[in-house]
Length: 217
Image 1 (cartoon, rainbow, N blue to C red):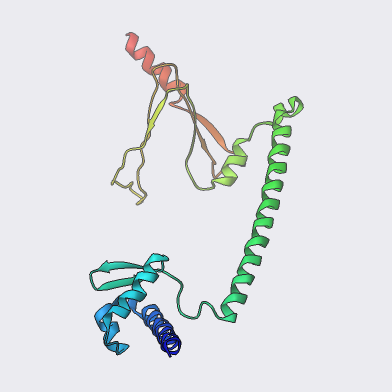
Image 2: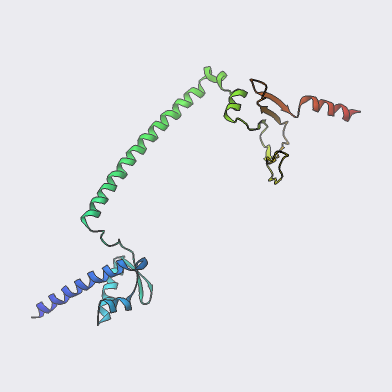
């Protein structure tokens, strides 16, 4: 007789646990008030609810948010279904496929990098390591381009300007400063009437020489 009572108690407790967990999983943000749960599940002895929460907390499926409030930390409802199991297997296969593909890409990337290094380090190719003014203008058509050759330690600042030119374009300024050597700036522009770009030193050499003459007078 005692065994039958124990069996009925365990069965009812197991059923109560199942209903409680289902209620907890469906709660908003996984947060459930134990008093509300006891009323919904029609549990007279709230101690049984606490027995369930103690076990769930012990195995890390829930955590206490307040004295009478807990939050579910496990998976959502339906996660133990056959559909979810198959979905999990599919995702694992997809991850494995993507990892293999990533390894192949890394290998090809290393090969390309090594090929690039071999070409760049070859002495016979050093005389080809340049670009023409025309090449640059093709890449930045319509833009004003400046090439800057400066020693180490040169500072470059582009202050924020709100003014605009007469044709409505934003004005920009570049401040260059070097204390270790001269700075060579070249303006590269495509003349509309010329087939090839025009490179001009900034400031022009003539302007520098005339200013120098005025300073010596």
